[in-house]
Image (cartoon, rainbow, N blue to C red; front, top):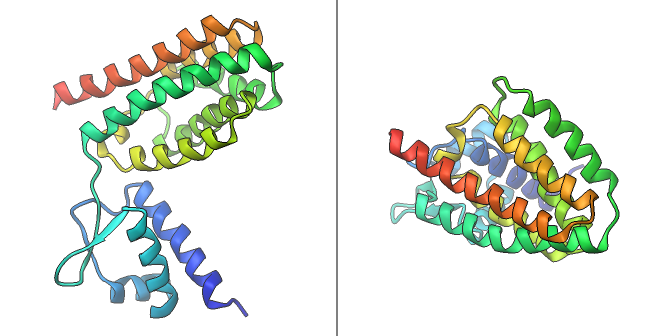
Length: 213
């Protein structure tokens, strides 16, 4: 029999995944009763999971007790981009200077080459491979704490609706390939520059989509 702690963990993962996928919008009111019925879960593990999501600032409780997904502003998104530019630029340089080409980086480059050919791609599909790319850089740089930080920052960024307005990733894939190529060549300076240019392009794309709205 599944214990209550396990049920709470499972509900936490399922609800957070739905939020990250945009299936609950930031202006949608949620109720414990509705969630309990929808997920087929009792109130005790449900409340434990909700408390965890509140502590992570993923959801908030209104004065009337209702629940709402917390929004992530464009300003917060751009701040994350700026922080990651600094951290991941340095990580790419370290990976190039200290590590041989890793299997994870080689696999990521293969996947990115497929994206670079163009075509419409589902956001959530690319996001998984984008996750793998950035975590592979952190692993190659032997920076496990950075990998943990990236997971958290990417989780926040994914909740910003502007990140889901794009369905073509060929340019982004080519930027990833440039980073991996520089790491494989052992060129720390080129790897750092390629990663920083990638984040400059990410920021420019976000601002460009805003200008079209």
